[in-house]
Amino acid sequence: MSPFTTPGGTPLAQADAVARVLAQDPRFAGMVPLDPDLIGQSAWYEVGPAVVGWRVSVTIGWGDCQAGCISRHVWVYDVDADGTVTLVEERGDPFEDGSGGAPGSGGEGDADIAGSQVAGRPRTSPMTPASGRVLLLAPSHRSPSVPG
Image (tube, rainbow, N blue to C red; front, side, top):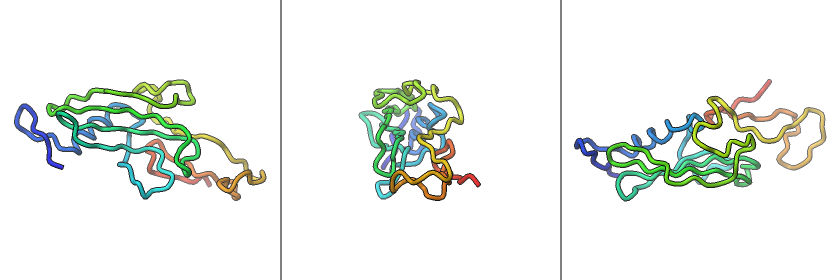
C-alpha cells in the first residue's frame, strides 16, 4: 500500500503506523500480523487505510485458541497522516485479571496463561498434553518456550 503524506511532506508508511500503535501498550510488544493460515494464533494486528492515514486493529484472544479463542479483546486505532495515534474503539471480553483491557493495565511482561496441566493426571480432552508439559508463550506472543 502506498504511504500517506504527512504535513511535513514525508510519507507515513504502513509499518510506521503499526509501530506507533504497538508502542501504545506493553501487551502489544512483539505482536505480528494476522496469519489466516496459522492455527492457534492468539494475538495479532490488522492494518488498512483510514479516512486520513491508517486504521490498525489489535486483537488479543485467550481460552482454547486452537479452536479460534473463546474470549477476545480488540482495540482499534487511527493513525493520522501526521503520526497522531487515536484510540477509536475498544470492545470485547474483560481480561481475567479484571483490568478490562485499558492500555497499559496489564503491566509490562505479563503473560496470558489460561488453564493448567499437572503431570500424572488423566487427559481430560484431546487438546490436553499427555506428557504433562505445557507450552507457554512468552509475553511477546511469538517466542514459545517449553518448561523442562
